[in-house]
Length: 91
Image (tube, rainbow, N blue to C red; front, side, top):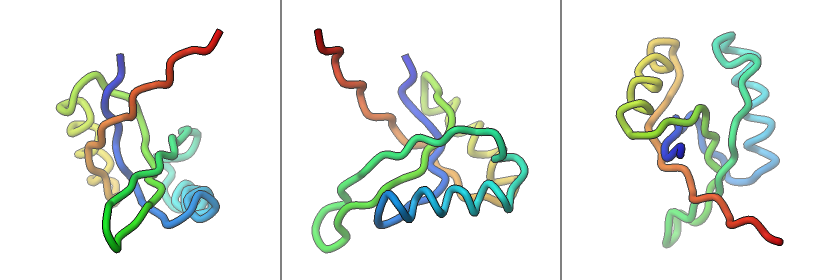
């Protein structure tokens, strides 16, 4: 099961995250053809909720760290981020 991904960017709302992702993919060829995951995270207090753009899927934090190292060499922000647990299937 995949437990981690690379956190590439954060935005205040889903529409901003989708536009931001499109802009990042246009500027960085390494991102072209990749499919992001959008995860809403509550940072608490006055910071509120953000939508994080995540890439990849890794079984452990070390895999995500190595991926992020490569992304940072390409000039991108990237930090390992836990993936949320999938919702159970409904019948």
